[in-house]
Amino acid sequence: MVIGVFKQIDNLFNRRPFLTKNSILYILNRVKNLEGRLKLMKLMFLLEHYDFDKNKLTNQKIIGNNFIIYHHGPFSFEVYNELLKMIKDKTISEEGYSIRSNINLDDIEKKLPENISKKIKKILSEFGEFNGFELENKTMNMLNIKKEEKSKFLGTPVEVIISNL
Image: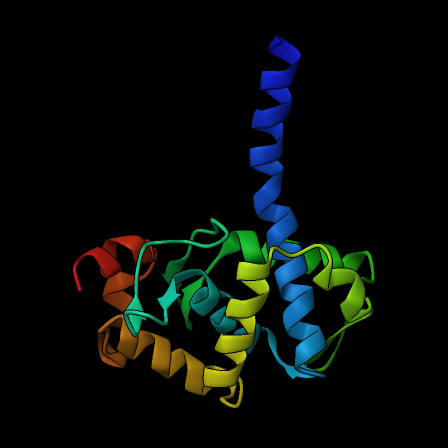
């Protein structure tokens, strides 16, 4: 009984990195040679916080990654660490600003819950054509932060900002 409880707790903590990794891979498979970490980070932010039904940012996270305001807008150390792990273990390749998955889309699709894969498709349909800097501007506008005010918000959790929108 006690061992079962610890297993459930362990699964909860391991779920976020698993879903983060597979969401990144899913995005990279749907956008061949994605141009840069900045774009990937903003797409992951939108996956986490954008609500299509309400057409705005919310604090209803789909994976559980935490984002703060950083030099180029919303940034997650959790997402970034998963990205670095995958580069190191060659799950993904990075050449210049181009990032691509070395894992087959079919293998990833089986691992992701349907609600996440559907939301990624919507995010890519709505925001996929923008480059990283355009997405930085769009996400900062969604957060109602002007470029010249960004330094005042450095390190602030986006949940705090979204709560005050």
